[in-house]
Image (cartoon, rainbow, N blue to C red; front, side, top):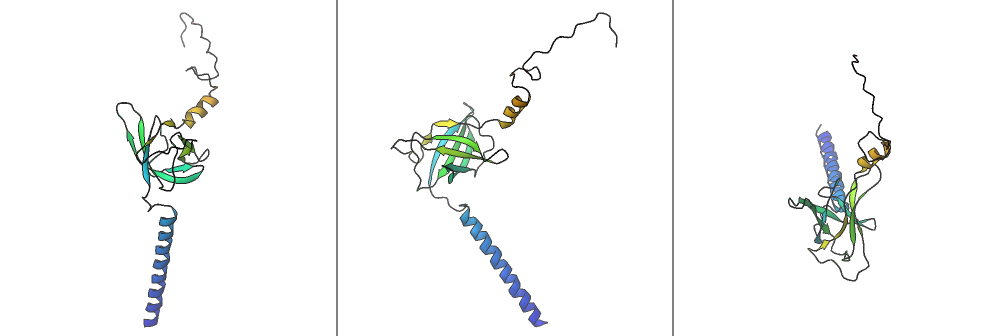
Amino acid sequence: MGGNNTVETIMGAIVVAVAAAFLYFAYTSTSSGSLGGYEITAKMPRVDGLATGTDVRLSGIKVGAVSALTLDTKTYLVTLHMNIRSDVQVPVDSSLMVTSSGLLGGSYLSISPGGDDKMIAPGGAITNVQGSVDLMGLVGRFIGGGGGGNNGGGGQPKPQQPSVPNAHP
C-alpha cells in the first residue's frame, strides 16, 4: 500500500507542474504581464464594444491595450487611455478607429500610421479618430428600407384610412 501512495503523489505533482507551466505560457504569450511601454490618449464619441484590455493594433499586429476608459461629463466624449509597447512609435498624424474582427467578432482599436516624421510623445494624444459604428442600427435601417423616417420602413408614407362617421365595430 505504501508504494501506491508514492505513485499517486508523484502523478499529482506532475499534474500540478504541467498546469503551472501552462499558466506561465499563457501569461507570457498573451502579453498580460507586460506593463512596459508608454501611454497615449484619444477622445472618441462612441466606444461600443471596447473595454479595459481591448487590443490596440497597428497594421493588424497587437502593439498595446486599452488601459482605461473615462467619460468627460462636459463634452460627453470618452477618453481612451492606451498603453503602447515602447518599441513601437506612432506618428503624430496617425488615425485611430474602432474596428470589428468580423461580423460576430469582438472590437479592437486600429491605428493607421501617418507619414509624419514626428512621433507622438508619451502622454500625447491621437486627434484623428473615428468612433464605433452602430452595426445593429445599420442592419435595422437596411432591413426597414432605409427611408430614414418613422413610418415603418419602405420610404413611402402610409396612406391615411378614411374615417367613416357613426361606424361601430
